Length: 330
Picture 1 (cartoon, rainbow, N blue to C red):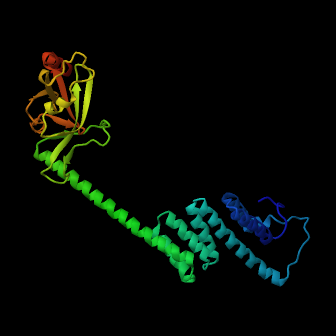
Picture 2: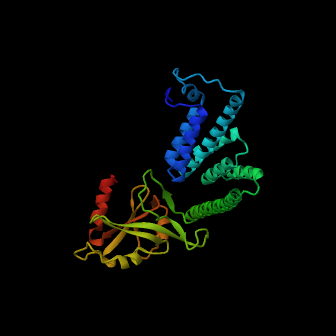
């Protein structure tokens, strides 16, 4: 605060800023109101007080009554500016600043009910339920018939009940997810199906290996996200849930004909199916063999939770296999 900026005593200047702030509150100009209250607090600070009087001002010798009244007036104004600025911060959603201003007001006057009310509102907005309840209870101790505080106390209780319910739901969901994970891993081990994760798994959204219909029942069926690869034509199809009891032809029957197969070469009778082993070799899947049996044979790995099946034309399968061996150095 620059010297000589204001005339009058700190209390007089603070009173003026407080009244301007109140005018802004009436029209809900919260930022402007906050600024005026901040200025009011500034002129009441030690630095603000010493900077207001210039050498050209006539010396005023206050009476004893004025000397006693002035500090009291300043404290009242400081309390009012803090609690009013708390209202502005509350409306501006500056909740932590609201609690700090209320705390400053309560240091001056521990019985300021508005400070307890506004602090409790801010704490409730932050979901600090215990602190909000404490502030509200302190206010009600001072003014038990205060309707706003009583209503707020009900809101705090309702919010606490809601948060407890949400927390319970989260715990139950986490416990359920843990059970599902344990059951899935146990089922994969029981079926002797090997899985492996890489550092960069592909994004398949919500598709994942799961048990159906009940994820926590050992009698449920394993379902696998599956990619059908057509390596001879660099094409693919994605099946979100391929049952362990299904065979490849069961799915090809509804996938064929392929939109890009202009020669209509791909039919269930004209193709063979190959899956890569963990060591880089190939296993041919029989037409009547279920996916679960192929995966449980011990050689195939399910990488990143996705089954990959190569669908190759019979007439070109031998050449493709030789190409794959050459590429992998086998």
